[in-house]
Image (cartoon, rainbow over all chains, first blue to last red; front, side, top):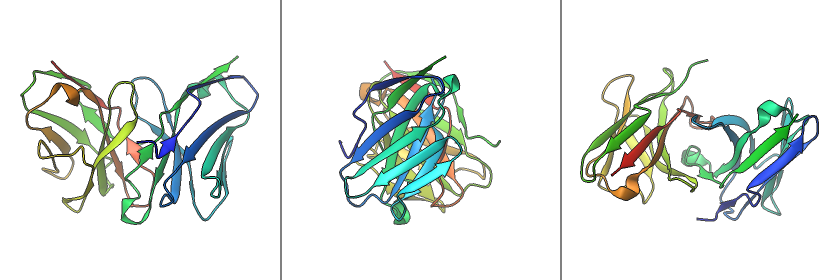
Length: 114
Length: 113
């Protein structure tokens, strides 16, 4: 199932710099997109979401951008902090009665160095 | 902050045995889900549950799987006859509204030997 793809298995960033995590999708029915963060031995924690009627959503240090024509979304973290080091998952759903039926990407391991 | 609680954190069982994974969703949530992640693979949707019935299920969720909300607080996933390939991390999730982000528990690691 390659409907949601995160092509970068890992990303390493210096503290204070910007982290950009990318995600591509193929299913045109997806209209709700989310980013989750996961630490070892914990469940995914919701970070930020965006619906297909928007192209940008911001929450503090986190901004998600959606490019529907390219079927691409990205998560920007500015400034990056060592505590941001985790696995980041992109997820998508088709909305309607299926909002909670999420299709996940493979995840990107972010390491923020002090 | 309220949490989704899953027990046990690790379950080891023999092939062919029945297992029940337990979850206590956040108290005012109405929509409940099970997901799983096989080691090295993606997190996969299994089933959604609302108003005491299954709303949607994936092709993984075959007759060997069932879910139940036996009382006002617990939400369970039963696997009737476990197979080696059922070994995975199972995550329970809940949300108050169908359009709200899911809150996940910390998971139960199921090992089938």
